[in-house]
Image (cartoon, rainbow over all chains, first blue to last red; front, side):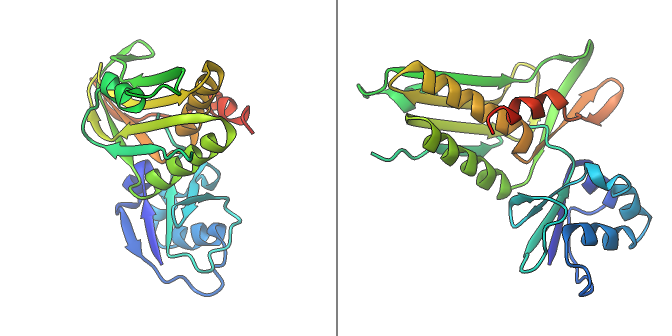
Length: 83
Length: 153
């Protein structure tokens, strides 16, 4: 699946997007955050406070307990500050 | 008659008067037009700022604003709706966002515009970064914006 990062999450991770193949036991958004965090210091720093991170699956907001099954694109970002 | 919202996510500035005219010109069924313009301030908490840079999530920004536009059209009897949100570098005094609602009577137009702005603030995927003499920093989300959005649920 494709993973995108925005704002300070993007800056901390160091890339705007990437394609990842998490193991089968990564079933939810929360699992994905945990798996990404284990990939290195930059990821651990980006996700150090997982509760503040917002997520979207295929362009729609989801909660962190949302299932990843069928997701083509998952995005992580801080709370939004537009408008 | 079904109403289609005009939604634009763009880097370029827009002309508020022109957007209002485009929505209401030649129409005799519209009795009220409400417009909200969000403008870049030149200071934040007493500190002067040089500019804002807005990052957005292309694709999701259109989808998310579209979902809220559809909800506004289903909740209020609107005859027209335009939403424009800019991205990129925006200097103090420049436009950031525009919501224009048109209806037969003012109440629907006022309420729908307020609803849309409350949701744009908390759920449209845009992030503001401030440039000041101290450097650049991401603007933090505010709890009172979440409270404002929550009153519509």
